[in-house]
Image 1 (cartoon, rainbow, N blue to C red):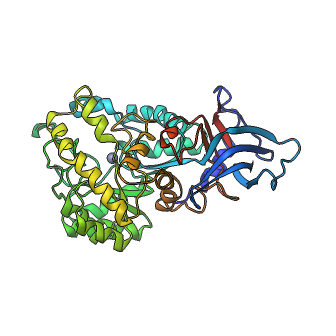
Image 2: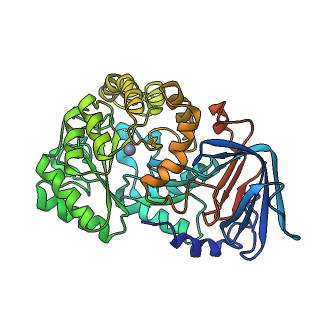
Image 3: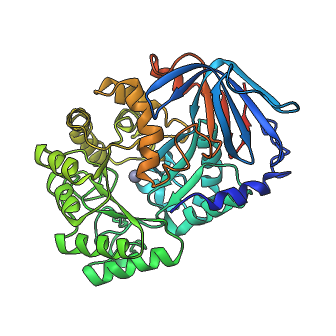
Amino acid sequence: MSFKGAVLAAALWAGVLASQAAAVEAGSGSVSAIRAGRLVDPASGKVLTDQIILVQGGKILTRGGVDAVKIPPGAAVIDLSHSTVLPGLIDVHVHLTANPENGGPNGLTISTAREAVDGVANARRTLLAGFTSVRNVGAGGFADVALRDGINAGEVPGPRMQVSGPPLGATGGHADENLLPFQYHDKEEGVADGPWALRAKVRQNIKYGADVIKFMGSGGVLSHGDSVGGQQLSQEEMNAIVEEAHMWGRKVAVHDHGTEAIKAAIRAGADTIEHASLIDDEGIRMAKARGTWLDMDVYDDDYILSEGTKNGVEAASLEKERQVGRLQRENFEKAVRAGCKMGFATDAGVYPHGWNAKQFAVMVRWGMTPMQAIRAATVTSAELIEADDELGRLSPGYFADIVAVPGDPSSDISTTLDVRFVMKDGRIFKRP
Ligand SMILES: [Zn+2]
C-alpha cells in the first residue's frame, strides 16, 4: 500500500489546524526553504553540513549545499542551522488505539469507540515525537482504519498509517480474550480455527480496510493463560493466511516469540516477524536467506517490568516478560551481526505513545551503530512498508516529512529523544 493518497488529503489541512499554535500553513504553490546546520542522509550513511532543502506542495523540491541551492525570493525560510535534520521517523509496530494502563483485566472496561478516541490523542503524540509514519499492527473494531482515514482526510493530526485491523489467531491464543469464563461466550474478532476459516478472516479484514494482515503465530507476554513461546497456529493454517493475504496484495506481519513458531512463519512466507524474541541460529539463517524482516521491540521490556504491576498487568505476564526480555536483546545482537533485515518496531501502546525514540539507545547498546539505528527508522523501515520511493530520505520527489534534533544523533543517539521540529507533507506541526 502506498501513501500517495495522502497527498490529496494533505491539501485539506488548511484551516483545520489553525487552532493549533504549533501548526503553520504553507500554501501548496509556495516554497519553504529549510536551512539545516547538519543533515543526516541515512541512504548514504553520511552527515552533511550546511544544507538547504526546498519544499513545495508537500514534497521535497531539491536539496543541496548552501553554495549549490538558491533560496527563491519570497520563500518562507525555516532556520534549523543550529540543529540536525533527519527524514521523518518510521515505527513499523505500534498500537495507537491501545494504552499501557489498560493491562490485564483493566482492558475489559474499554470500548472500541473509546480506543478510537485514545488513538486520536496518541496519533498526535507520536507525530510530535518525530514519527511521521507508522504501521499499526493490531486494533479492535477497525478503530485503526477510522483513525488512518481521519488522518488522511486532514481531520486528525497524526502520522501516515498502514493498519491491520484485528489480528488473526487461534481460539484461546494471543489474539483472543481469555480472561472471561465460558458463560460469557466471548471471542475476539480475529479468532478462527482451520485454514479456510482463517482465509475468511483475511478477506474480512481486507473488506473493512486493512492494508496489512497480522496474525499471532505464538503465545504472547500480555495474554492470559498461554505460553509465550508456544506455537498457536499449525503450519497449514499459517500457509493459508499468507497465501490468501498475498493473493489480495497484502503483506503479512506475524507476532512470534517462539523458536519453532518463528520458523513455521518464515516457511509459510510471512513478510515480517514481530518480536522474534526466542529466534535461534537456524531461524536467523532462514530469515537472512529468505529476506524475512525481523522487527524486534527491544526497549519495552524495561517499561513493562517497571510499570506493569501499576498498569494492571498480571503477575504471570510479568514472569513471561522476565523470561524473554533479556534473551530477545541477546538474539537482537545476533541478528544484527548476521546482517538480517531489521525494521524499527517498538510495540508502542505497551508503553506510552511518543516514547518511541527510547528504543534507539537500546538498539545501539545491543549491537547497532547509531547510523544503523537511524537507518532502521528511516530508509530501512520505508522499504519494509514498501514506501521507499516516497519516504525515508530527504531527496527530490520524496514527501516533505522532516524532523530536527539538537546535537548530532549519529554520534549521540539520545538526541532523538529531543525532536524539536516536525514537518509532515510540508506542514509544520512543531517548531523550536
Ligand atoms: Zn504489538
